[in-house]
Image (tube, rainbow, N blue to C red; front, side, top):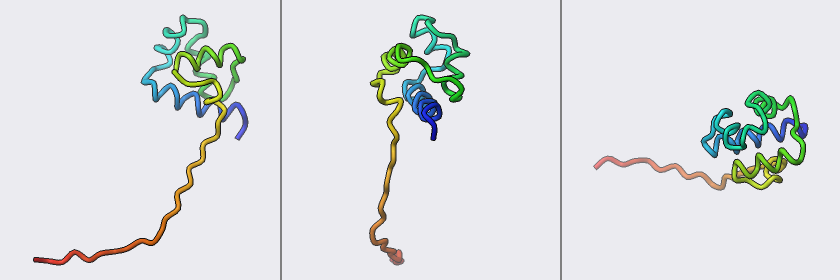
Length: 88
């Protein structure tokens, strides 16, 4: 996964968790960037500069490093037990 792809995935995730549309996010950051530019960030076509990353992090209530953290979830299954339902 490239840095652009990682940023795009995490950016979209943060936006959706905040419940904001691209238009509402644009409004929230004072229209310092267009909705079209935000869309390009989400698509992984453009990586914003550090100033914009800080601005987006503040608007979405996440730390700037959130956008670049890889998340891995490992689940280990232990012994699985099956029980037969008895009739009364």
